[in-house]
Length: 146
Image 1 (cartoon, one colour):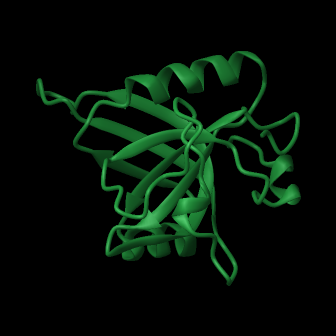
Image 2: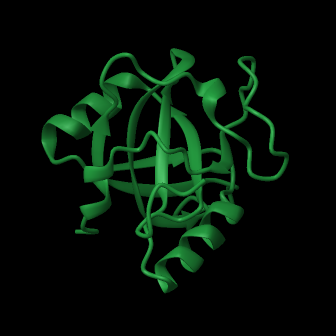
């Protein structure tokens, strides 16, 4: 269920190392990361959302322990492929990176968009398109994509 008119109805869940997210948060709340899989579906989601003026939330669990969501932000850019190679990687940028306050939401509270079922605790895939949860703070709706 969307949390407001400024968010897309779906979001992206992924994992990243806590140290990388902490550093990006401390620096400027912007992170550019590389994932080893192609995020083609996420790229389409971002394009559609941008056309309607909506933000696509990106929710992070810690790569060291994926049970809880530790940060959220908003997708700014997705580039398929690793620059200069034929690798099936994705480079993505997120802005307004923000830590979830305690108690952090469980990953299993996210509902997979394609199935309508919660992400299982044992889930280890690199990214999942989920329904945007209602727990994205309301003040985040004023996010600017700068």
